Amino acid sequence: MQLAFVQGTVVATQKVKDLQSYPLKVLQSCDHDHNLLGEPFVAVDAVGARDGDLVIWVGKREASLAIPGAKLANNYPVDAAVTGIVDDHS
Amino acid sequence: MIIAKVISRVVASARLDSIPNRPLLCVQPEPGFGDQTPLVAIDTVQAGPGDTVLVLQEGTGARQAVLDDPTQPLPAQMVIVGIVDQVHTIFD
Image (tube, each protein chain N blue to C red):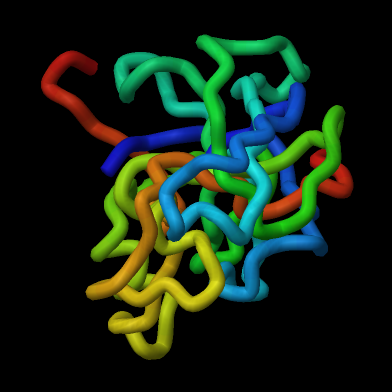
């Protein structure tokens, strides 16, 4: 997982059925001092983060397991997903 | 696996149920071990800030190391699987 800031929300009413039930958030990774890294990307959010939150997220195959109800053999068309909202990190 | 230094503890009370209730540590890969992007790893060896640790970076292994039942889904790859005491290399 990595740290990222939630920069916005993507509204896409017309989308793959499997993505219907969770919001899409625009994230950008950051380092320990909250300097932004890399490029923004869109992640599925099943945790309930709000714009501006510092979150942790997961990418690659494991992101498809980050939707409640996902199974190893039956998961979701997702390559990036919020896994938690950071309260603090010291 | 890579060697990294633990920078801080990450507290994330609101998180996916599929992430077990274990400590989350922010780690910085040591120079030469991947790009220097800090990672957030699930701790299984009670490491703390300042420790040098061994970080596994693969989903199947992560399930083996973290879950009682590795057939359950785990949306994570980064797991701390060891605390490094020393590294001897031929270059020392």
